[in-house]
Length: 487
Image 1 (cartoon, one colour):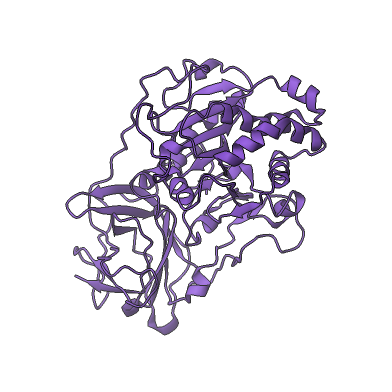
Image 2: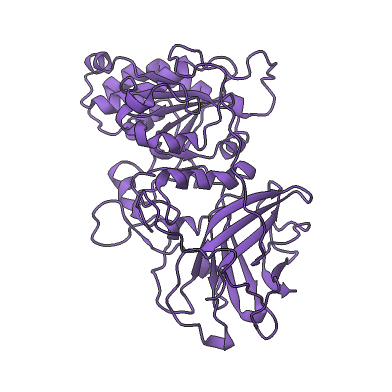
């Protein structure tokens, strides 16, 4: 996948010149739009009986427009401003957890924020999300005046004083861990959870709210994810939340940690990892990690589409290391990739990258959908156990001479036309108001470069240029079993 900032000419066919593909019984090419309707097996777990259909088509439906962004009324560049959202509203302490009950603490650097700003602005919601960006220095140059679409910032407290008082060996670690105390001090009324993360991470805030809504916020919880790379967990800890992917602290735990943070930094002054230090401080308070597979540190390099296209069926919480991997969409830069992945997320985060596997019996095709990101066609019916394994398109984070590399099963790239998928990536998303549905459109980005699969009379999918999926706008996971075509 290209990492060039200037996108090359689009490989996607124009509407006027592209072929209109139709599936008929004889597989003839005509101008008729085809649909592949889903027939759902009623005894499949989590399979809703009222799920109308996912649709694969070649129709000329209009492209989705950009989302609307509301800028805050206040000056978000004022570092002394109190971080309060929804002030004046009555808050039932026993009521359901909502976004206003979360405060976000993002630790970043002034030098990196110049190019990382679009990653955070893609998911930050002015006047809705509450929190701070903690910078290591006052912003300069093109960061001024401060963007109203960015989180309000403040410069981290005197790190030199923290290091002198604790004797810590690493200024960077001391600053990052001490940042938890700085965010807790600004929490204001009604905060139930503290979310800590980095400035190169995309967060799914609705999914975070849904996640913590299932916990008792009055108790002590430390929620986060492990690294995907085995050695990262070995080098640091299998019991820590990797902070780049984000982690959550219930407010009582965050407050207890804040009150003891200086003593803990002194106790672990020899550690050169902020995440391991945080884990150690939390463990000393009697709390261990509650792991969740939706947090993604993304300790991998290169083309990570093979991982993201086969995401496990758990809600996506975060995507870290946007600077280290290739852009997750072909032919766009990282900033545009962050904006694009948030377009479907604005409509339904519960589905984001959820893998759906379907079959089209007349053609013996298998479909794998990573909702809101990509779709694949296999020219043969493949077992679910095979399709659930990510394709190893990505490289290891650090030098490792022999496996195991990953905390999950993988399969290698294949040159077999029956095993290698046709890849399509999200380009458009649109809400279909009359039926309360969501239309996502995935375009072929490159030719597979292989012949057709000849097993069992299968047919080539080379002529398919795009896939459209219509999903009901309901907050639930979807499972399908078979595809059938209809005209």
